[in-house]
Length: 433
Ligand code: 5AD
Ligand code: SF4
Image (cartoon, rainbow, N blue to C red; front, side, top):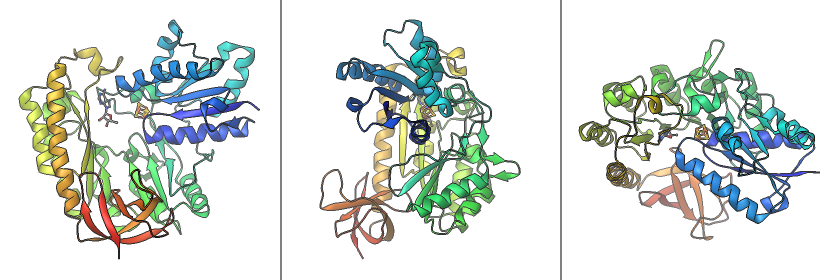
């Protein structure tokens, strides 16, 4: 049996795709290796969203060659679609396979066929319909299972490579999602996280995202539903109400802002203004007062002035996110922004801006976390130790915040009521009630 090891980079969608690819490989008679050393084939499931994600992969391929010189190495995921030509132009990395995100159904066949004919090792065609809805992923045992409910993206935000690497939007049937969730509950999973590049743009026949959430919430034995990442443009009041009315749907919304200035949002093609975004936050907080809000922000988009950047600061001050991922703009070849603009915000200016936002965010995270001290929260245990200690366990509260409590025989998958006693900007600490 040929042994294959898959290493995953990037977002949760990639983690899910790795589980899909593993299921196909196993079905096709391959063995799944636990380490690269044990494998004949190593596949890197890659991300292309920023340049440093790409760089990491080049470094990793070189390192793998050192580990084992006769390894066959393949690139899966977003870099596959994005860089097929570049990877192969002067294939000095010696890549044997390039397999795009819509080709995983054929992954076993691709690996087998290319033994006879190396040209067969490359398939990056994108599909308008592939959702893998009939493939049951091979998951690690745990408390949370990812389920991709839609794939691809039609938005073409001007900075973003995803529409090119993952193709157009398509959604899988509600019935297939419910069946998979029921099976997961039988296997002991307590939580599902519904995934999509624009998860709330989900649409299957007449069913929209809010309908799907309600249907999944009816699955007996399922305790928590999360989703990521939504786009602010598809957040109607009925979706907010469905979240508010349903105990199983966690009160955490990751709501990418990207920028606070309306002109920058316009050239980013985000389809909302600063005021519209703030109004959405207000609506959400009116209906779900205790909601945890997190975000993604890009600083240094081409032409962003100091004044325009101040609008991002202003939105952060007004919203006070629980946490935020803040990125420097990274030019992606082929995107609308790359075609239209030079990457003209100087690097030291980008550094200055990101440092300022990180500082602001740290203060907000600490303030938000400290506000939980004294509360009693229900924690789902995720790990029977923490990075720092095997005397503690860690879990997450409804808002997806990490909570650390002293070990007391707690097992992964168990719910524990915890009194929050202390907090840092990164974690809550608690004791059992
Ligand atoms: N440069 C920097 N950050 C980017 N993101 C997407 N594309 C880029 C880019 N070209 C960020 C966005 C998105 C997150 C997943 O990555 O903030 O929400
Ligand atoms: Fe990276 Fe986006 Fe692809 Fe996920 S979908 S791997 S974040 S480029």
